[in-house]
Length: 143
Image (cartoon, rainbow, N blue to C red; front, side, top):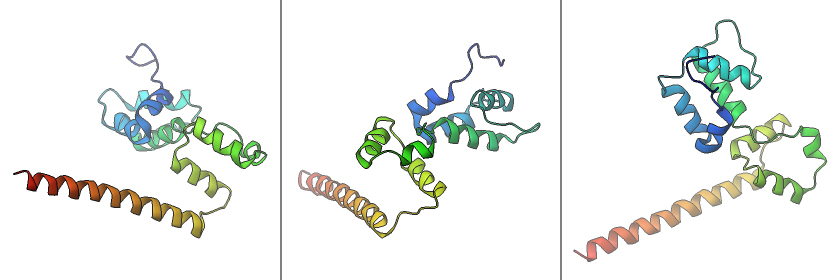
């Protein structure tokens, strides 16, 4: 075991920090040696080569530790739409994992999915821009 008394709980860190936070923590921490990353990978049942590259370990740890879908695809295929939605929401499944699931099934979001994403992004940017313009205009008038 490394110099830390308890093994690093990558899943807990992923829950607290999200995928990008976990990645940053593993990449930037001076305490995360290749040996520690190897231990974390093995604790997540990730196969490790004799001389793994640090970045490969980080990538695999992040991929496995942030995985929220814990049921086999065959079980998911047996679930009804509303049941799937409740499951995904209860497990706080990240959008990237949902896209990965679709790719695993050789499915790509079609025009409707892309259109919904475009509309969501446009709406969020537009509303944020409106607030920025109001704040900027309001500050200019109060001077």
